[in-house]
Length: 344
Ligand SMILES: C=CC1=C(C)c2cc3[nH]c(cc4nc(cc5[nH]c(cc1n2)c(C)c5CCC(=O)O)C(CCC(=O)O)=C4C)c(C)c3C=C
Ligand SMILES: [Fe+2]
Ligand SMILES: [Fe+2]
Image 1 (spheres, rainbow, N blue to C red):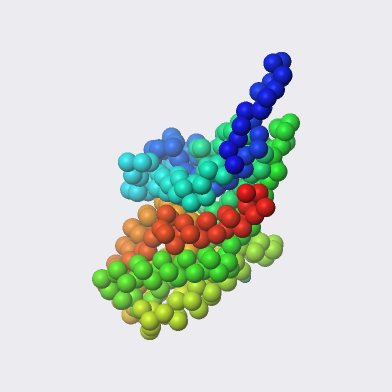
Image 2: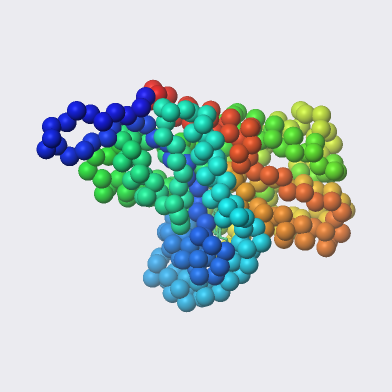
């Protein structure tokens, strides 16, 4: 369906309507790998009350007085190690995912992407979809595992923007897909393909998920359970395939932030413990990240390797996220078409 300019009386304001849109949303990233840009990005990200659940009166002085004066320089160094000629890997891959999905879905759907923090913002891209005449919009947060700090904050931001619209589109949100057979199958296919291309056979396959404060699990956030279920289903799927015979599977949580207790076991401590108990060859995958980013390319692939090899490990590999792989895009198409049903 392509939109058509309707016949309107001469004195009628222009109207575009009748289209369907789909907006991929990922977390966000700085505009450049320098301390100033990282500071601007972190100020927005870490001021979100879904992310830091401390009353602003107590948190903002710590954020503005300490964290934004120390962390940006350190983070900028990490970003500069993984920055590409197309910018931040996360933004670049998300943009390419949107292009590939647009190709798969055809002209019936206007596909775009946005970042929850930084650019392109959800607001700018929702405005653009509306200006293209999208009366129905699917919002696809690229988080397989539901978490208030990621999934819920996308919903909150979209709701905030909707409050400013006179003519609101109909909305659908892609639900968490942590146990969707399409997602588990895509991961199993893509990880097996990558395993077969490795120059060594890992003794251990470690699934590393982004961490969260332990307190959020106690408060009822399903994130931990979603991660554990993904890991269990993925292990069950891989264990049936010949290339994985003899591999031991483990799960851990990375990217600890701040002093509170986070979900355990921690990825860096797991790498150390594996090396100390004699594991020589290890492979890591980050099934919770839809796209490679500073957390996989720097924290896992650079820092993680350093930790493991210095502790006595011999072979180390971080497998790619689903990114724009055939398996990953076929999965996103399946999920998108399900949510678009009745709208096309
Ligand atoms: C995949 C899910 C994610 C959850 C859950 C999550 C929670 C969370 N993160 C922080 C703090 C930081 N995260 C940072 C980067 C980052 N986080 C995710 C995903 C999740 N975060 C992604 C995809 C990225 C990469 C962004 C990129 O530009 O590549 C950072 C910035 C980097 C750094 O300074 O280390 C911070 C800070 C908290 C506090 C939190 C939950 C409470
Ligand atoms: Fe994070
Ligand atoms: Fe759990």
